[in-house]
Image 1 (cartoon, rainbow, N blue to C red):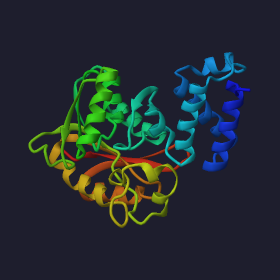
Image 2 (image 1 turned 90 degrees about the vertical axis):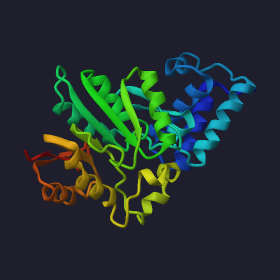
Image 3 (image 1 turned 135 degrees about the vertical axis):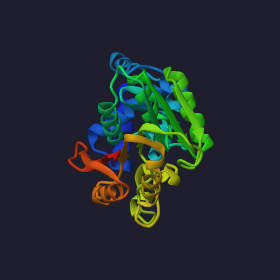
Image 4 (image 1 turned 120 degrees about the vertical axis):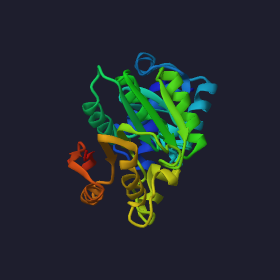
Length: 284
């Protein structure tokens, strides 16, 4: 007898929980996400049709996606999408998967950008474009530039901008190298900040993500040092920089900013209570 929708999702959630180590709630959510994607239906459809029997094609499609997840591939790469700030962003293994922690970076940038005034914004290491695109959509008066050293990442970001109707200028650049002579009111970045020897790079979802978007030298601060050192040459007087970093790097980032002449340096905590964004204002 063919399996039903509900039975297939229930079996998948148990297998995901066992293979990936998720709790029951997270595993059930992932199973429903995979089922919705596999069958091209909404979560509400899964509930309304829970007793429906699957066709052989539906079962095969779902099993193929489930196998990828059971092998450890991030669900965002399996489905090709991840929500950020309430919007869907296409993701591939060429870009870092957007995470809720990075929404804090966007929130702090929005707090510095009046909705009714023009501003020049720079997003460094844009990846999927989630930060730059969100800022452009939330602050349509702003002119947003986004750079990345990866042409593949920029292609994904440009597709996301087109799909979401965001006006963003994308540039291929090794950080600020291609921006000589250009100055901005605010620079934001979620750069690589994991130490190259961190064992977490070999665990979980990050095994599948581009290491160049995660690791930065022996202490994880190599790219943050480069950004802070170069930022004053690309900010207007009184301009701001906002940087996402590791939960144990706030003091080090503060020291970098203060050494380069930034004042009113402050930290902002994520939902877990860790300082994850640090920013400052360039002295005039």
